[in-house]
Image (tube, rainbow, N blue to C red; front, side):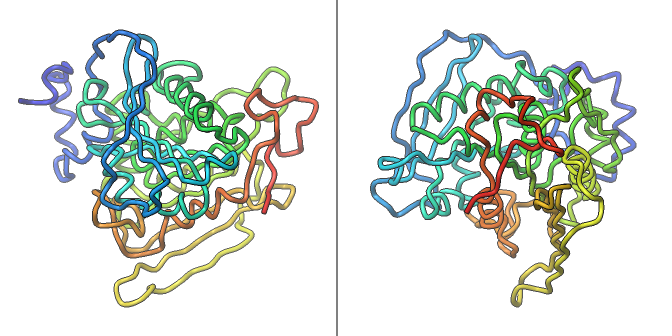
Length: 375
């Protein structure tokens, strides 16, 4: 079956020929427009024990649970890792958004996030995109309804995050989001539209906000990294909206999402943070052993001299999670280890106590960041 037939793309077929030299399937699974979702009865949130992913935590008191979540007459699947330590204290929450053709088990196995989460005390939520919403299980980051606040997939994800934080006593001042590929693009949408809800974010092989509003423009942005970033307009009160600290990973050999996209994400973030455009720290490393990738890490400080943006460019890395485990798809075991670095970055930041309610304009700082570093 031709996946484009139900999407009425026959008239666009000539335009696809210009990308004949690229692996079309890889591009299509990143942005293909979804068929309409069939409504289902609104059900209560249901949670069940699940078979652990292939890379699992060895603590017998940790939990790997699968569940369903109702939102606007549709039912959404997810899995959640709950470390043993949640019984004794409130823990931070990491939201992991998978890439194309992945699911929660695949993404958890490939990133090894559950292992790090148990060691360092994080709850990890893995929302799952359905084939009904998108045939390739991609998050629909490019659709206007899905990069607006309080609509589409962002609204569903935020409702799920609130529900999981409530069920497992998650610390709402330390909620983080990370994503790969289409999941990375959706992570960008979330932190731009909900900067009051996330303490920090990570984007691996993703794209910037607003560079596409339909499938063909999404393809072009991915292919050349030259889409135009369209940030939301500033609020009427003229105070700069809080910006979310961001760590960005991208391979310079990525032929699915051009590495220029990571430059755009960083430039977007620097603009939102009112950062200096020159990095405050640059470190370049050679190969990490016989089979390791070399990389360059750039750190940018805001006007208050707080490091709030990191950019990791990994030499020779394709469209894959850096330092990932072979048990999952779209991974490259050669370092640097993105999972370790992402959690290290997240650990520096927490929102203030009013993060969930939104920022009080009277407390706005020069760079608009209602976030502080902590040990």
